[in-house]
Image (cartoon, rainbow, N blue to C red; front, side):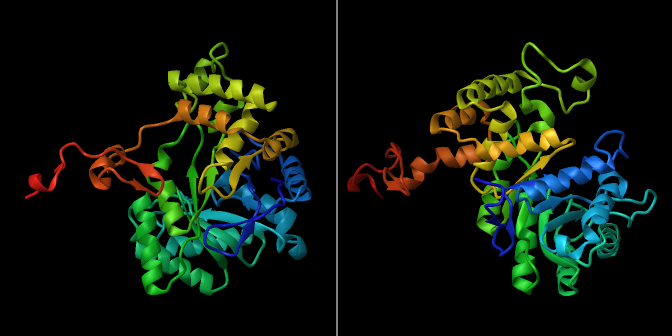
Length: 359
């Protein structure tokens, strides 16, 4: 699928590229990342190849990520209006101020104004609530979103890193009160992180939310740079993020095998696997260099066979939280030996086997 074969985001009319340009690496203010000129070249290359979906956040590189985008794109309305720019609130930019972050009305309103200033634009195409703020009522969050949309400062809204039940509660608050509902869900999703398949992915599909996975390469773990023979150095291993266990190395083993079969890099295969998952609309890719951007975009040209996908699915499978395994096992009790939606189950041996046994 080419980068300019656009997809509607969730239950909305917003069309986005199948790969979204993540910009957490724009700016060197956190001690790593891309300088301003490289960041601009990455943006231009992504756009030239047909990409239209850029993702940032108020807190990325202390606000510098938004400013780089604003300086390069925001001040040019014809260029800006052709793009879908997503940013996030909730993160606190003001240490010592309890209302400097979170999902309360005061914080969200202020954060949007600050983002508009840095992005040098009159509106945000997609506003994410970056994290679940357990101290803010969900109805306050959804009403504030609706006010921002009605004021013309935000076009669409999405949840990022929220529990499934919170997203559902927010959606129904919006539906019942005729407020603006969410259209998208941003979550960590990769061969290494599949627990989201228990509740978050099915919830998104049921609620009409397009999924935009972050960290599809698991912080570089799935790029092929680490193997059983080439483990991360002690400093990175102790960071927690790159602390690999036997399951990780089993995934890497199969990933390398499939990459060789497909004539692709491990990173391309890992990205393609995520993009092929049910419910996924646009996968967020990061790039500190033009070479990394090109390598990530190449994933769109990869085709995985059913057998290759099966290998990756099996080696990366994770146990879903209760009650998923229980409910799957209990289908025999529910279906009574019938086939429903293509799934057959044996008869339940403890059910009455004849009319005489039935009270």
